[in-house]
Image (cartoon, helix red, strand yellow):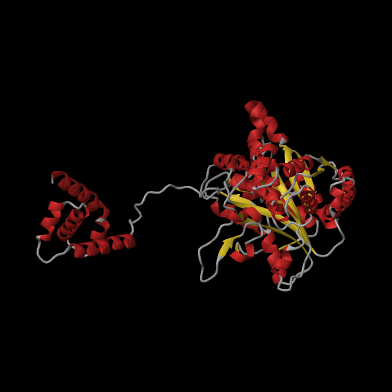
Length: 547
């Protein structure tokens, strides 16, 4: 009996704090609440003696007490905890915030990519961040499990977009568009295991360039590879390789190696892991998990180890096995043509025909390609000096671009099944950012987070109105200018702010300058000062900052 009573009292003590909020909002007396909860506690602990005592009270039953307690707990849930709940301030798994310095780096990368896309004649579109679930279903093979599904919203089953390609195909079919060259930069979402240090997130940007339309073979495909080459060269990330293959070559290879038709896609997904796993592990998955014979797996192993250029395509066309597959021969002929065009674009030094490249997405039908950094030179050199032989591991980001031909995807959405041939490439922007951020950290050069050209400062007190009048003139002339939000700031504080923010020029106003109708223009880096007439100030600022 004593142990039961102790438990009852302990339970009551904690409950008092639990429902204190309810007391403040309800007209129930404290004494009445204690009585109800005490009785409820007695019942909850099932102490026989206590329960008998409870039944001795006239006009109250256990069921009534349970009902009242349930009402009170429901009311507590509605009222909440008045904001007293403690929680951890963090971003969701696989996401991150970006500070001004990181955003400045991102903006520079975006501008480089957009300039390249526009240079090749692309126009831009946008699509919703979520799509009907059925739009995305069945387009990504084994990766479909990574799609984020949303709760039922008014009768529509929705999912966050997994990439920008499937929404683009839906857009073409819905609007009956048969020819377009477009780029699209937007966020996509994947319920993946994030590797933040390698630029792998659950929410991330994709930068897509696609050409839709019926054109002669391999001309648009070659341009996509040229675009990848231009972007990676301009960003100066280090040495890279662009691996190319063809889905028809893969399918033909699987057929001649004895892979059953119904296992083509699942075996393709396994081959796609060769950039992350050894051949032994890939073979083990094929045989033990996918049910492929060891003989077939060994034959695949012989082919996927091959790399080369146009010469490899010619050699495989003469291969006694591969030559038996019409699909493979068609793909090999197109690879030869592709390399011919790439030679004209002067990019074959970075492109390699690699039979291990698979890209597991189901919608690819022809040429596929992937760009991989082989050495993040600027970063690895610094890290190697600091961290020794394992430095390269810290900047290993893998694939930074990928794409291919998907001639059948639009037809999946068209009511009449009309095909619109498409080819495109997606730049792995987050992985590029990981490299660029580390390069910025290793560089002594300061990253500017604003584009302010000049600071309007004062050398004496009581010149706020004059400063505001001058900065208004500069803003109206399109000059990026800033002023301190104090009536009488110290000149030294204003100059120090310019040095910290990287602002190149200072326009200094003083009583003498106002009398003479000039502004003292100071170059922050050299501390050189020169008097400029108010009439010539705007043209002088532009001359010095827009060169």
